[in-house]
Length: 127
Image (tube, rainbow, N blue to C red):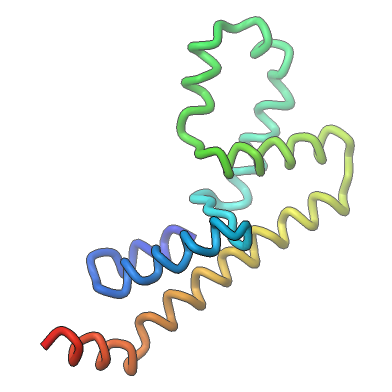
């Protein structure tokens, strides 16, 4: 998802895309996740595998492990973790679809803000 934003970073379209994604995020219609599905699943598996060991660690260590993730990402990771622990395939499929929908939404919004008509309007408005 981030790779689509990285392509347009520094352009006028970037600010418009980020603004639109933030609005969707506040409405809970968009999950602002910076990681691929495989990375989310890997981290959820790590948390499942080392759950007992992490329980005995100091809070500072756990904070450093979780620090790279924002609140939405952590909620999503813990949802994956729960579904994996309960072997709940339908929930995992639903979570995967949510990630796929979010990636498609970012691609669509980026394309809409970077199409030729938008570039012309932005250029003309700036003059």
